[in-house]
Amino acid sequence: MELDWIQETEVLIKLLESGSVVQPARFSHRSFLGLVRYVYPECLEGIDLTALAGEFVTDPEAFATFLLDIPEPDRARIFAQFARDIAPLFPVPAQHLLDELEHFEELPASMVKESNTEKLNRYLKRIDGAILVGRYTLAFNLTNRLLKEYYRAFLQSRAPLDSAIEDMHLMSVSVCRHTVQYFRKHYIPYSERRIILIATVTNVLATTMGRLNRSPGGNFFIDKAIALYARNNVKRIVRFLSRMM
Image (tube, rainbow, N blue to C red):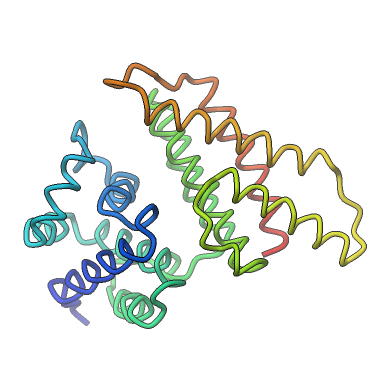
């Protein structure tokens, strides 16, 4: 079945615009372009995402053209990931988009409905690839996104009232609290080192990301050691949290 990409692109743009009103920190054109760069980095190589996002806010037609110019398999992956991200806010239109994407023959089923393990492996593959070619800042950004996505998924499953939190520090506090509650409720022995790991790694990632965002002219860089630290410790945290999701 051939997918009507023009129609689904209109659906996505309307969802993004609605999301930017409800949760502007999470659903903005700038954050969406970050997702595009993750899935299909070639199309945004060397481009100022903030400036481009500003253009797309004022010119939806240019935004639609940009999306339709992305190769179909990558476009499908971008649309599917965005639909999953925004589903807690707008479940009906998000599910419509996912249902339509299921009919797209080049989109693997795991991109529409993927397990925690599949998502982790997909991220790790991209992170490892970025580290291998020396793109340590990209690897760090992907790792940061991976941790934030898992925190959000964990809170949605364990603490829905906290699932709208966007600050990484506050997310980790809530994750730690509900993790301890979970183990106590089920009389499961737990190591305080796991809880300390969550807090420590989150602090390192959030602080480093803040320095990256504030660095004038890109004067602050991520080196290999930081990229590997983030990658290895986030992997440990994700596997730990996945047991409770």
